[in-house]
Each structure stands twice: as structure tokens, then as C-alpha cells.
Image (cartoon, rainbow over all chains, first blue to last red; front, side, top):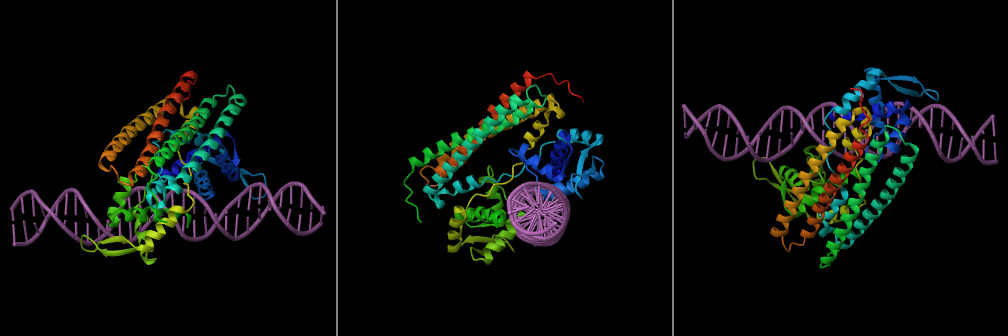
Length: 185
Length: 185
DNA sequence: CGTCCAAGATATCTGTTAGATATATCTGGC
DNA sequence: GCCAGATATATCTAACAGATATCTTGGACG
């Protein structure tokens, strides 16, 4: 239930913006929600099947032979509202960077430094991306009732990237203070 | 490979601190790495089995009938170093809060406000926890070569929680500016 | 002293999921 | 028009989380 229902939420949400094929759905989720959400084909197809059975989406003739375009139904819209109101299911944390840093003494101070610099650079790139996106959307979608909500999710990405940068600097400084790790290997 | 190997990293890392039973391993991962990592029993047992077969851990008589304590071997330590050096595998993002906010127009401004306040409160609690933990550890583990690395991971949590708080405030302000959502339902 | 119960510890089992892969269909260069 | 590569569609497999089943231990109470 828990996780599956959030897949349904994402799919119904995407279809609520416009009808799409399964493939386009994946693209849309990746490109639009990509900063905070992802779905794989392995999820999309069976979930679409289930939603169709429940009458929340309808299958139409697709753009090419054998393909289907999915349209959200009235009951699908209602279901989406329900799902959005359900409690949030969080995914178990799995931060590979922190896992490596935690065992930093074994990994070696130098490698840790490299990891931190890389993370910082990544965050910098994300930051620029978010900024650009926010500026573009503010103009293109001006006045849209969805705009504040979209900006909100972009802002979350911004803040998170800024946090990574500030943290990486602090951590790098902390490493300078303890260079006493000649480190085996 | 990709995914499993990070489970092996966590397990070998934990065992590198001290020998443990599978149960204790889970506890340790939850309590010590919990802020950024998690493993389930469903993973731990088969992974321990695999590590034993490869000779990276050894099974010893456990503290009670039928239980086993696992000890990391020489080759296990080498393997841990290897694994720590491998490229980081990231988990696909799945942020249920942002998913709901993205479809905020459908969910309704009021519910969005509640979600933001809740997220902010959660972050505040985490922040206090991280601060306490950092203070305790700085004293108890003073001089330990692992301390800077541990503090680094805690600091990551701190920065991330602070970012959530700042973001939530900004998002709430953004919602105030657009109260024009009488919202169906 | 035994025996019952609750908490602790151990292990497996099941359904969900990501990502790879297999298969089919287009589109443009020649 | 036909081939190569891009695009699109669908399935399959092994990783995975969380629930559950089983066993162990200590201690309350007769």
C-alpha cells in the first residue's frame, strides 16, 4: 500500500496535467519532478494497469501502433485528491557519501577531501540549475495558479544545495584541523 | 553489484568497529548510522551469508543458543577499503512532501500550510537532536581519530535540518501571497 | 522448583521496486 | 526504398523493506 500508493499519486498527478503514454509519463516524471521524485518503467506499467482496472484512468489509442495514451477520469481526479491527503511515506535513508565519510579513518583523509569537493561541485551545479529554472518559470508561467507550488519545490532544491555547500566547507575545514592521519594505504 | 555492495559496505564497516550478532548489527546501524543509512533484516542475513562465503567475515559462537557473532577478517578489512573507494550509488529521490506540494493546487493551500508547518517542526526536533549528539560525542570521544568523521556526518544532518526550516518559512510566506485559492474541497 | 509469560533475539518470507534488458517502431541519411 | 540509430514499449530479475514466524531467556508467581 504505502509505497505503491505514492506511485499512484505521482502518475495520477502527472496525468492530471495532460494525457500521456507510459513512456511520456516516465519522461515527464523525470524531467519535471526529477529533483524530488522518480519512477521506473517497472512501476509505471503495472500501476497504470491497476489504475485502469479501478477506472481511474482510461486507455486510448496511442501515437503509434500498439501504444496507448492514458487519460485521467473523474474518479481518478477524486482519487488523486485522496492520495495527496494521505500521510507521507518516507523512504529509508541511504546516503552513500555520509556512509563513506563515517568510515573516513579507514578510507583516508585525502579521499574524503575529494569526495567533499565533488559533492560541493555537484551542489553548485544544481544550484545554478535551480536558479535558471526558477527564473525561466517565473516569466513563462507568470500568473499560473500552479506557479507558487512549482517555485516552492524548486526552492527546496536550492536550499538543500546551499546546505550541502555550507556543510562541505565546514567539513573540509574540520579535516584540515586533523591532518594527523598518515593513513595506512 | 551496485546496490548490494553498499549493504556490504555498511555491514563490514559496522563489524570493523566491533564483532556483533546480526541483531546487534541492525541495532548499531539504526542507532549509529540511522541519520543517513538503514538496513533491514531481509538484507543483513543474506549479505552476512555472502560475506562469510567470501571469507570476509567469520561466524563465531553467539551469546545464546543458535546465534552467531560475526567477526571481520583480514580480507574483510581490505574489502571494506575497496568498497569505500567505489563510486557512490545514489538512491532515486522520493520526497513525498514535495510531491504533495507540487500538486498543491489540487491538494489545497490550507493542507499545504499544515504540511509545511509539520515539516518545519520535524526539522526543529532533528536539529535539537543533532546538537545534543554533537555535544555529547565531542566530550565522550574527545581525541578519538574517528571523532572528526562522526561530527562531519552529524553536521550534515544539522545543515540539512536548518535548510528545511529556512525553506519552510520561505514557502509559507509564498503561500500567504497567494491566498486566492478558495479551492474546491 | 517448576511452569508460564513477556520481552528479547533470530531468521525467513512476501510483495514492492529499480534498473537492465528484450522487443518493436519510427526517422533520416544515403 | 533500405539500413542504422534513435525512440518507444513492455517484461524480467534480483535487491530490498517490512512483516511475520519461531525460538530463547529471564523472571513472576504459584
